[in-house]
Amino acid sequence: RAAAELMGIPSTRILALTFGIGTMLAMISGGLISTFFSFNILSGGTYELKSFVIVVMGGLGNPTGALIGGLILGALEGVVPTFMPVSWVPVIEFVLFVLILMYRPKGLLGGRQ
Image (cartoon, rainbow, N blue to C red; front, side, top):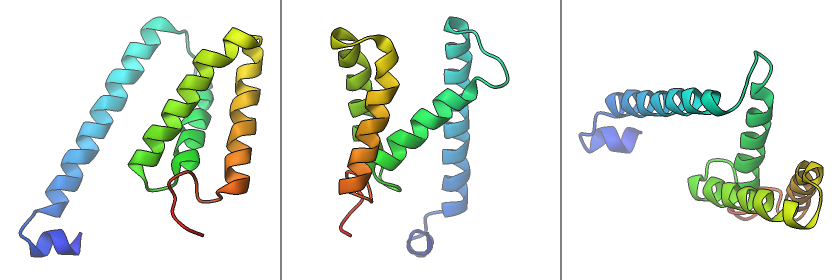
């Protein structure tokens, strides 16, 4: 942030803009998902837990790792029901999550230990 300000980039303005864009995208996606699925005040926990797993699996602070983690979980959600009952999908996801954290504690792209 300091380096950006030394280069003349208004970092406070950029931070406010990115926060606004992120908030807008969350609002739009929440509005769209509510048209397909019923929800109540406690239903956000599922999405919160899945996003936590995606971010930690990819490596904290690494957007590319989060993208890869999301692609892995998405592929699992698409492939596992072909071979097993749908109720096994979360089990397989969290077993994979634990295995990745056992062998790579900082995530897939989290860097060296």
